[in-house]
Image (cartoon, rainbow, N blue to C red; front, side, top):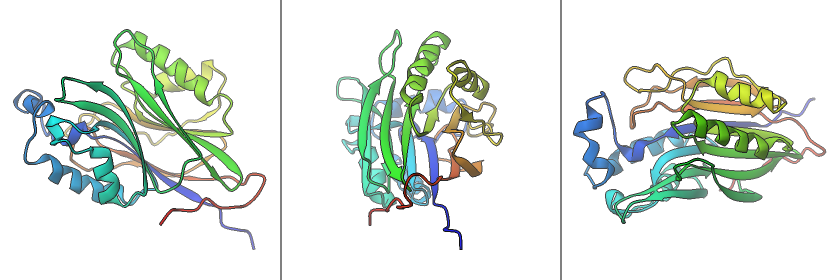
Length: 261
């Protein structure tokens, strides 16, 4: 009887530091929430933690690592505890006089063999990527959580940096807010001669109330198999989260990756 192959469930979510936007005008009327605390933020994050708990590995963008606006609560750690993730990793990219601690994060139910923090190139600093490495069934998998720049020139150099991180990887997963069309990312892989599995199921995620742009994306190496992928209709941000379930190929041995209780 053939041994069942192992699967990993992935989610990428730009959380907008727990601000629940539902219309364009909220960017003006709720702008103060990006600098100062409010009473709804932790309740919003608790709701999000319930959704995140169903996944194995979660990439987070626009979370706060502990500042005035979050009432000095590390939102990544908060979500890990509420969502039942024994491991979390963070990368603080921007801070503003103690008011904000802008960060990316990764929540995982699997222990990482290696964790790296990368500052992405660009004229304006503050964009980054977190790299974690795990091993499953004898196969090494590099997982990168990113939040790319708004400007095209900076994005291009950031994509070049990221493809260089994965070009020698056995298998890779890249998740995050790309701030560009999926074709732009695919061409970056193609130009670097990296074989990426082009997911036909990527759907618009932004803005949450009227999705038009496929900014939130998950990319995997060609040898990894996509079981399903979908955008989730959840609302605690100005973005919708995107999920993917993948199947892990057998490597040199069949030792399965163990979840940490």
